[in-house]
Length: 346
Ligand code: 1CP
Image (tube, rainbow, N blue to C red; front, side, top):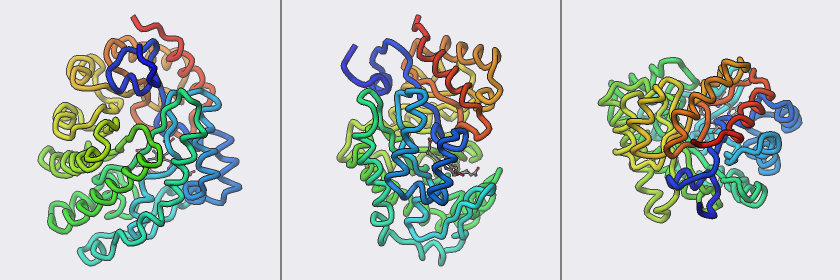
C-alpha cells in the first residue's frame, strides 16, 4: 500500500484496501439542500459562477456519503458560453443555446475573454483544494468536443444529435473548424483547472455512442487524443478518465488511441467482457444503472454486489453508468455507499 489517496491509487492500478467510489452528478437536484441553495442563488448558472455557492454545492454530497472524490460543480456548457454563445437553463427544459450551425456563426465564436469568463470556475477549483477532506480527490472536468458540439449546433439536447451529425456529413470543413476551436478551448480550460488544483480530469462524451465507426474515430477519438496530448506537455502524470458513453466494443480502440488513463463505462457493457477486455488495458469506473439507484431494494443491492464481485479483482472505481437522476431517493445513495465501503476485496 502507498500513502496515495485511495482514488488515485486505483487510477494508478496500485493495490487498494477497499474499492473507492463516487457518483456522476453526485451534486444536484436529488439533494434537498441543493434545491434550497439553488433557490436562493437564483438559477443554476448563478450557482456555477459563484465560487461560494459552487464550493458549498460540491461539498454537499461529501458531507452525507464521504465519497472518495469530489467533482467540481459546473457544467459542460460553460465552455460554449465562454466562447460567446448565448446559453440559458430554462426550468424543466434543460439547456437552450442559440444554435451555431453555419460557417459565419462558428466564425463569430472566439477565445477572446474566454478565461476571464471562466475565472469564477477557476476560483472554485482553487478553493475546493483546501475545502475537501484530506483523503478526497478533486476531479476537474469538461465535455468532450463532440458532445459539446452536439448542443452548440442543435441549440439543445436531442435523442439523436441529428443537427451535429448532419453538419459533420454535409459541411465537414465547417464542422472541423468548430471541433478545432473546441479542442483548443477545452485543452486550455482543463490545463487551468489542473494549475488551480484539480488532481484528476474527466472528459464526458455523453453522445459518443451514436457515431458510426469512421465518425467515432474522427469526432470522438481524435479530439480527445489531441486534448490529452496538449495537457500532457506540462502535466504528463495527471490521470485523465474518458467517458465515451455508448461506445460498446469500441472502448478498447478508444483507450489505445486516445491515451486516457482510465475509462468510465456505461450501463450496457457486459461485466465479464469489461473484466476480460478492458481492465487489462486500464482502470475502469462504473457502472450501476442510475435507475436502479431510484428503484432501491434487493434488486439494487444484488447488482451492486455483482459489479463489485466481477470487477474488484482489477483496478476499479465504483460509480454509475450515467449521472444520478433527480428522482433518486438520497437513502438509496446512502445504502449503496455503505455496501461499497464495507465490501471485502477477495
Ligand atoms: O439545477 C438544475 O436544474 C441544473 C441541473 C444540472 C446540474 C446539477 C445541470 C444542467 N448540470 C449540472 C451539473 C453537472 N453537469 C456536473 C457537475 C456535478 C456533478 O457531476 O456532481 C457535470 C459533471 C455535468 C456534466 C454534463 N452536463 C453533461 C455530461 C454528463 C452527463 O450527465 O451526460 C451533460 C450532457 C450536461 C448538459 C446538461 N446540463 C444540465 C442538463 C439538464 C444537461 C443535459 C441536457 C440533456 O439531457 O441533453
